[in-house]
Length: 312
Image 1 (tube, rainbow, N blue to C red):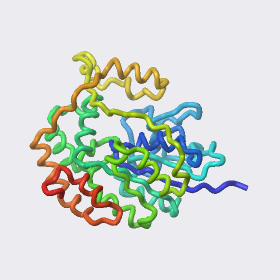
Image 2: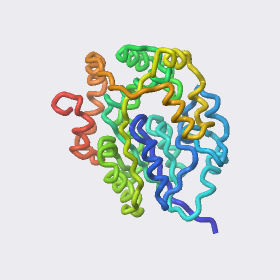
Image 3: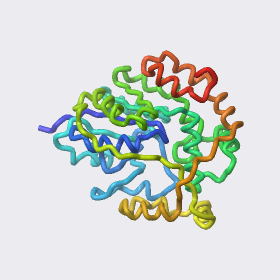
Image 4: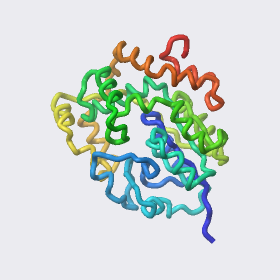
């Protein structure tokens, strides 16, 4: 008799610790996570990297794949045995307007987990990462925000930057509430996840109704800001080197070595005040809609609105 597994989805948001959650939850004996961290099956996400569309091999691990056929998607979970849950950690699901319905149609009893980060910090973190990798050519944060947000031709994950869009939490949360009850949705604070990881993992475990006393191996992650090591590495990346697009071919030790060549730790640059004001204005109404939300505690809300006057 074929075993029936429960399902959970970590749906986002981007640059908010979903990779860490994937790595931690992979340790739990009651959870099976595939060898691909981001699958993007239930969203319309795409990629500019051809490698992301190649079918994953069973004996390798990958950060990102764009998988659109059901057979390949199901094959990612075929090694599950005694676990209780099968998980999918794809941050494009929170942004994509169709993802909630698609997930519900297949798994109406699924548990939904979303990590929310201060939206202004989240946008800036994404911008700095994309600048570092040579994905973003504009060296002015405010100009990059406006250029991307005012582009109405397409709003596609993998094509557009979506700096602002990813932080519209209220509207994205409502898409999931159309299909899933509040007791099927857990909002996790990025601040709690980084400052008290053990507490957050217990919260997630209790939500999934699995052993919350499981001793996760917690890594100390400093998340230091990294920039180009020198002008040569900056030139290479700004010319859209394909090196980082094929990183999944290499073992982790090789990847860490390559990153050490290209990047160095340094102080994170201060956000431009005009960009901060722009984001405060853009996010103002959306963030206010989260106040007194049953899924967001008052402390959680205060964290999300810390860059806004009077906490909102």
